[in-house]
Image 1 (cartoon, rainbow, N blue to C red):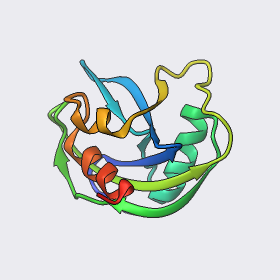
Image 2: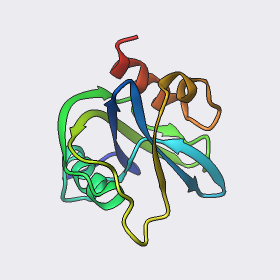
Image 3: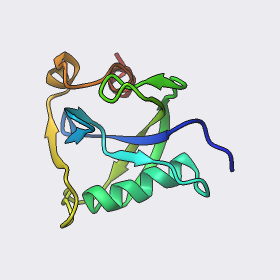
Length: 133
């Protein structure tokens, strides 16, 4: 299966008016993003979101819908090309970062996320769509 350059899949999880954010280092930059990551050559973006949420948050997720597929962009953090895709997801249970993962997960107020310079524009578009605004 041929994927776009540096294909990345992310899950937007909304609960009780909050959104799950992964705070982490991306190259030399500290940023907020949605949980997710690279899509392996043999998997779909949906399968990558499911795998990444288990790896990063110990959550089994259901894909509800695709939110945003902006095409290949240049990362504001690494200045390298990447191709993100965002999905609205659902999950039961509380996120738990497994040992060895270097992310910090928390549910945050969406308006705080949208106002932050720690969040890249494609994430903001996906969040707007998830919130219906």
